Length: 274
Length: 266
Image (cartoon, rainbow over all chains, first blue to last red; front, side):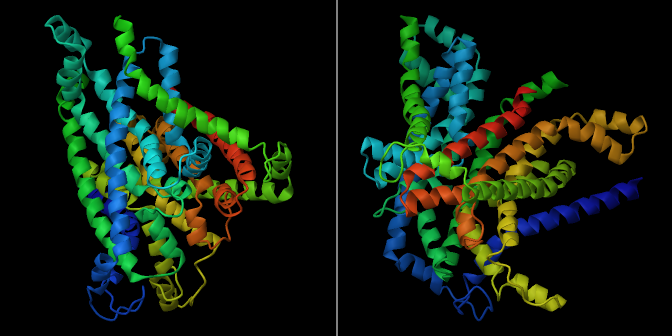
């Protein structure tokens, strides 16, 4: 019996290792050739950091990098504010039908394909007379990040006991006090998780940005797309290795936040379940 | 008075819904009724039902179906085995992490890997099959799409399997069910919600992937998404693009309805 379970244990590890390897192979492949002095994504000739130097000397690329980060941070911050307000609004709605209607509308942008979001926003901006560029990209990123924030914050709000708010009100807190001193601290883990998700969605987005970006403005994804269409350049490899490092840090940060966000609630749930 | 102050939170959120959820859908439907010269017509819809567009739509659905199927075939066992590991949350994180990496960079990596001098062809050569044209084929498109969607399929299935009460499996085994019977009659039916949401998370985006078709399939594969992009950004025929978008939205709605019980059934 024990030898049998050991054998299946080995089989599990092998299968998972294979999937794991395939998932990481392209990323490692990119990173490996980013050090190739040969200038192509095959036949490794010698180690060089030339391409990394080129990334930082490429002023256009550095500006685009700054733009991308600015868009990500601003859109995440603003969409978090709207999303938190939205989540609070949804919990305050008394009518069940209205609440589920709001939730359905909330999820439309989450399930819509990027192309539809991009195309419809392009029409929207044309109809409203918004010039394509920084503003249109920022507005789009805010728009598609809001529903994710709502979904991250909502469970925390639903878990919060309304007696906390009644108590604060009874003790003389104003509505603003209730929001800033009771509600927000309680749902803070959800807010952080939502902010992080919005950040990653913004950094990761290509299709929507591609539609609404216009000529003068570009984000990293759009730039990579146009460069990749021209063929292989090891500067992209170097850049992607750097991006992967940042992603790794963000992912670990998100994981830590997420485990922190769930741990306080967990002991109670485990007790109730067992 | 209390009611009015509560509604304050609803104002920015409702404004967002009206401007960015309702208005865009209405605008798409409205634009679909104009031709390239701005005349009101139903010609776009007539054009959509010609063999050229219908063939494209059918092929697009077929590719999306294949991508979903292969993702499921790889992801289900992976998710199942993940729940059996000791540090399953950590393993899950490791499996999900590549999906955080920009999609275009992964597509770009495959341009190198599938290239004539890439490692895949080197391997084929070493095995004795010889160099093959991999890039710009249907195979490369489906492989890369499956690669990209696997994490999105693993996650919901993993969650469904993780919630499965292990005593049900133990009971089935105690009552004499074989491993396969246990899977077919107990494990799989109880995790269909995860499978459904996984399929939904893959099928709809797979219909609209245009960057992969451009980069990997070299315009050999035209999906509905590629066609929309083409009409909006290349030929500037927004009317026809909107018409295809309307059909994509309908397809999306149907997919949601077909797989929707995943959430309602809970």
